[in-house]
Length: 103
Length: 257
Image 1 (cartoon, helix red, strand yellow):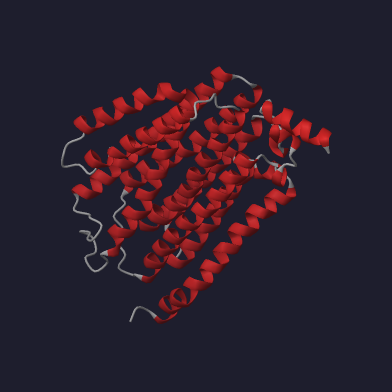
Image 2 (tube, helix red, strand yellow; image 1 turned 45 degrees about the vertical axis):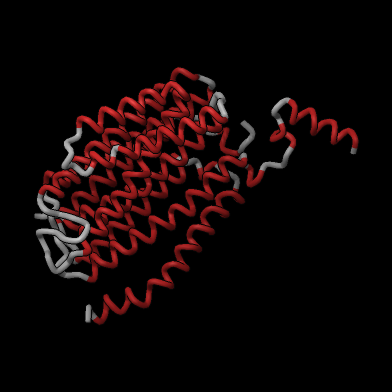
């Protein structure tokens, strides 16, 4: 294989990542049942855990961690940039609903 | 110049053109293409997830129908997808070693986990529909009719992606020998699933998958190599990744204590 990701072949790290993902899922379920946060705070907590889980999946399982820097930045910047643009389109209405209530 | 042209022609003749091209972003073009597709697909799911969370937060009367059995079911589904990602990555490693037998075994394991996910999700959908939930209404909060629409759109879109993923892996692992198996599952599913169940019609997605797979396999027959396994793995892990957002947002934000 002629690509940058070809060097990484150790199995152990994938089992660790799998275990970490299962543990994070258990924490999410626990948070869901304890309901210690209000809905907005709960959404934020669950989304932070989901972002950590997705970073593990993208970095290790999808091998982005082992790609060259140019590839990593191209993917991350383009996706995050699109989400920021999307957020600016949705934000005014979302903010109105959250702070002023449904009219 | 003449030498370079000669080299290029020889490389193309031997199917080695990629070896003489500067690799784009340090990766072969199929992989970059799949990453770009996944980036665009993430925006589709991003919009759906944003719409769901927007509705969830802005409606204090949002229904919370997911009791302990639903959450247990969804947690098992999550474990299935996470485990399928592990078997997928082990399949990619086996493909890199050139171990065809274990590549096929790991891909088969991944497909089994994916199929288990689809079946469990189908049972969950059937359970909710039996309780009276439709895309336009739900029995728990009549003032929030968008619950059904957003739930079925988001989870249905994801289920479709998982189904496509299982077919994709089947084609990579078994090539044209996968087609009769897919046809048998499609026909058996159509006759075994009761006519009043939504999946009696949903099973036709397998028929569409069969036709598309057959066209691809007969127009361009080839032995899929480690690159193809890795690219299919990217797609599969993406499906797993999306569920990491759907599970907490849809199920854990609507638990019935």
